[in-house]
Length: 133
Image 1 (cartoon, helix red, strand yellow):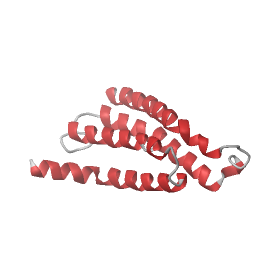
Image 2 (cartoon, helix red, strand yellow):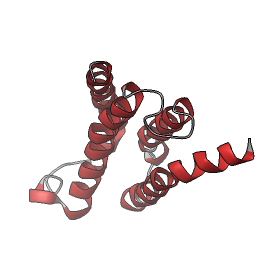
Image 3 (cartoon, helix red, strand yellow):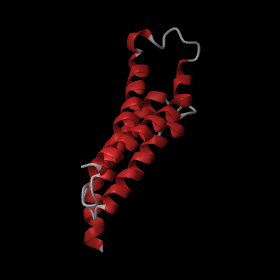
Image 4 (tube, one colour):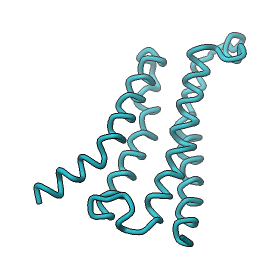
C-alpha cells in the first residue's frame, strides 16, 4: 500500500508543482485581493481531476483507459490557460485593456466561473474523444 501511495505521489508531483507555482503567481498578481481564493478554485478542481485520473489508473495516467486522462487534459487547457492568460494580461496591462477600466480588478470576480465552464466543456470533449480511442 505504501508503494502504491508513493507511486501516486510521484505521478502527481509535476501537476502539484505546476499548480502550486500557478497559485502563488495568481496570488501575487491579485495582490491579496478579495478574489484570490475564488480564482484558486479551478486549480483545485484540476488537482482533484488529476488525482482521480491517477487513482483510477492504478498509479498510472492511462491505466484506466483514455477517458479520464483526455478529459483531465481537456479541462486543464482551457481552465488553466484562460486563468493564467488573463492574469498575465492584467499584470502587464496587455494592449492597454485594463488602463481605462474603472475597476480593472473586477475581471477576477467572475473569472472562476468562466474558467470552470470552459474547463467543463473541454473535459466533456476529452471524455468523448477518450471513449473513441
